Image (cartoon, rainbow, N blue to C red; front, side):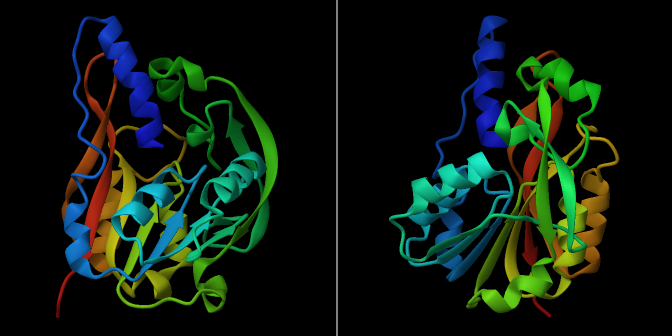
Length: 237
């Protein structure tokens, strides 16, 4: 979500007379090449923005992407169909196997299983309108037998406030990861979402060390940081 919404935010900053330079897309995670990543689990794939990026960076890695919204899943499948080591799943990940209603946003990267806070709509007016879509949710640990996971594992989670549920439903798989990239918020953009402090505490308890944040998403009205992609690496015993 951050990559897509930052493009809109940058335009709003320019409208206010401010120049905001964004980092080149392949600079920030170049260091992953040295981690010998063999498997990538992409949770909240949207139309394949991260999957395409990580495939170019790590062309030999197996990529498993999860996207519940039908139109986004169809586009994801189309965008990645030529990649032989890629597989897509049309369901969300959470802490229970269930059917739920998702808030499908006209700006699809802002779609969530949680209702959007007014702050989100205030600072990004293009995200104001949502419709409802029934989706399936499954636990990562339950479907892991369908995945051929080879060390080292990278897990990316970008699920608009549902991060804690993904972690709770994937304890065993996430414990295998060398690197986690988790979108975390510092201000509430969705109702009942866990903010950075809670996600940090959850992952510290599970043996991960916080390594810093990438791609800060700023409030175009006052410049404050709303969210970023937080990087965690497994601590060596």
